[in-house]
Image (cartoon, rainbow, N blue to C red; front, top):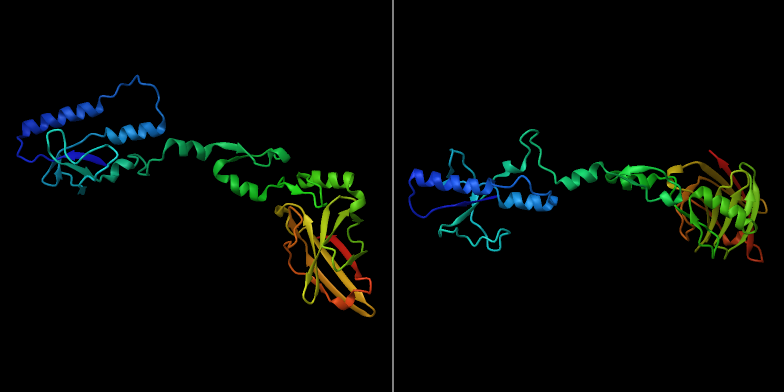
Length: 293
């Protein structure tokens, strides 16, 4: 926006031209040797010192016409609605000055131009990620980063790192607290109705899984999840069966990934084990087989 002065009386062309020349000269007389200013200060200076032109009968000098609006109190340039000679000030709404004359696109503050092309390290660099991404792509990268931090599922352990380091940590520190198994080899695991989970670790690759047990009104819901970033979606599947005499309940599903143990882990379904399948000791044995897809 630019400010214009509207005189109350008639002006001759010479006086009007002289006044316009002086005003334009004052607004353009800016030393070239000044130091570089902050982008916000430059933008503010430009908006306050844009050349003003006379508004005559609703038409700009030169014949062009623009919409005008009366100034409001408390404007950012401190105008009270009247110029130095007592004539009212008018605000010119000229959106053309906000567009680049070459590409006709709106001007962008330099700071945003810098941010758009700047690269920054991934938030997971402390866990091993070496990627540098554009600031605007930071969120998208971190959603799929394979170095997203995973939390140790063993109660009382606060270890947090990438999934590879977590597997090494579990094998080194918690070998006695996990159930070890091999891919594609069925194994039995016993649990009670009150056991919330069991931690499983594959022997050859060290991958960590969690068998979750959630108490439901009609029995216990059994699910299996893998501690791994979501970018590895759909790598494993499992087959779980509960037996009672000649009765067999079986469930197969793809394993979903999670970064930490949860009481309500994500899953594509579950095996519901009825209360009748638990023995007098309150426990039951499941046959579980985990495979790579």
